[in-house]
Length: 574
Image 1: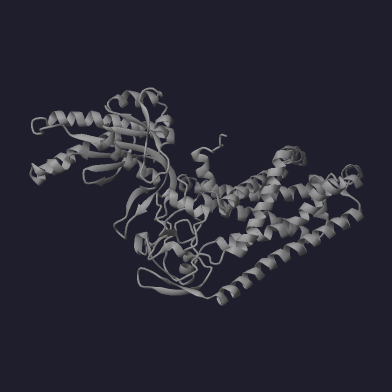
Image 2 (image 1 turned 180 degrees about the vertical axis):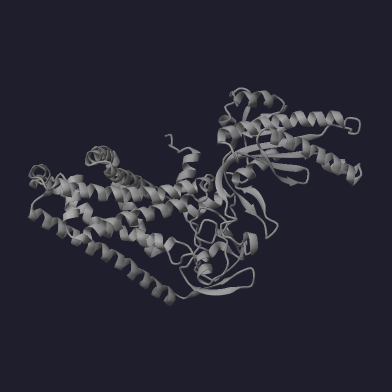
């Protein structure tokens, strides 16, 4: 019997899912609804007819059954995970707005349910047909606190959503450029929505002075009966009591957990700098560091979106709790299967623990003391590793300065090829170089640029060999590895020695592909993903599968014995 197996990339994606990722997806769905609603409100600045026409499209989309199921599932899931976050999160980073975001999020259901009960439940339970005229009339002729409550609900929901989007997007490559425009939209959209709500309300009050308008818009079918209103109010009160009870239960559970952890004992955490702290069981290592003001690197703020909080446990790691699926996914992404390497934001030790911090926090003062100065950006880049072959034997037969001269000429030839194709020479390690493509181009263009650069490197090195033929017993040879993927780009280093570079699995794979050129007897190895994105014909270069150190499954690659062929192939792809 044949077993069904998901493709590798789908299995990898599912392993990377955690509660934060689910909450993010649900939050994006809810923000899309909120954005649609706000834009609809803004139509009130035009006329009541524009409001009515806009809401017809809004309802047609969001009440379409499949969309409605997704929307309500997202709302329930996001709200439930918010309450869980209140219970689960023990410590927040100092100076962050995460506590404000959580407080705003927990306030939204209490602020918005009276509106939901009056409109959505009224329609579902009693068939009431409340649209903008009826809703605006009830708000503007009712108690004034209802207007303030609705305004607070709108601003609270919008602010909560914007904070969440900021946390999600701040590591994206486009965010720094787009931030001013996004900020303008974040201010302008709710302003127009509230002005539209105000203008629509004033128009409704003016129109309601005529008996004909009241007869057409304030009928019992539309507004409901007093008895129905009383039942809806009772439902609203019951929900508020239940919701506040749920919040109280979460807070009580936090207190009970803290009491249980104190009774359960404390654990001792010993850092590599000699610092020793004692904390209750149940805290993660990162939370313990934050609570005791111990500097600990964490680029993503403890969301398991990066690996900068990694620690290496000293001693036997078998007593540690097993990694969660999300932690295992992140560790697999950085290519480690060492059980002593763990994420500090996910590991909650139950016994005394000694460890090294693999990434020391940046404590520099001056130009790099700004916390955001060294924060990387997550983006797709193509990495090209090139290495000169035979430099060791070359050094044995020549004077040191002669060797430096030849290596510099080689790196110059390589750099010229990279720059002429839109790439950026990034790191020079001995007689090798890392070049990055995609810093200012989309992925497809970056893939094509990197492949053309490999071909131009071969052309330039061939010309260099011709010029040095009188002095070299054999031509300069080289190997190139090319791979693309999501990496973190940013400044790393210490104080005045910060350098811009890229970190990630894609960079490591490119380096290992370059190493494989020695055993496969070729000069260039290109991952099949980069090759396909570049749009090169599938039959130009042969395909094969290779084993990559640190990866569980083989990778499909393309090999080229003569890279000069890539100049035509990459150029055609462009």
